[in-house]
Image (tube, rainbow, N blue to C red):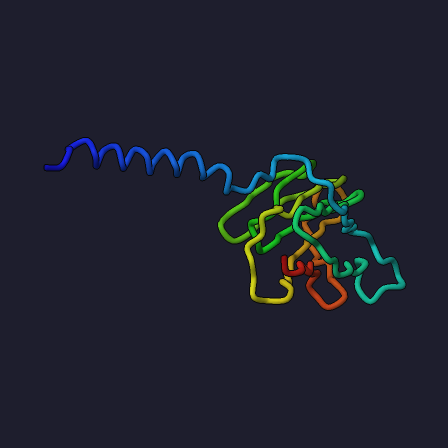
Length: 161
């Protein structure tokens, strides 16, 4: 003869285990992380450059690192095809979807952090190509240009965990 409460107790115990263990397995990106700060500045190249805007160098970003996007006196839109970035400070019109992160910087800077909980990858490194569009001045003149990297578009290299 089986006890009708045995099944209920087993399900309740399993649910309790899941509820207790789940928060311990989640990524906690809210706590402060000592990390490297990378700077990405959008600056006019003047008359010396191949492009109107200075090229943005490739950066090596590790889990937990922050990236400061500086627009100086211009307005920029940053589009990163990855949703693992979190806003730390600055920026406007912040959007994160299942597949991208986008934000605007209007005459200042924004700092984003790469989530410290990255998925394991079989690749030795991950390459993220992102886009930066700039409009001269804070008032968005109507003319938008892409800012190039050393090998357009700009990119971040994330080493394997």
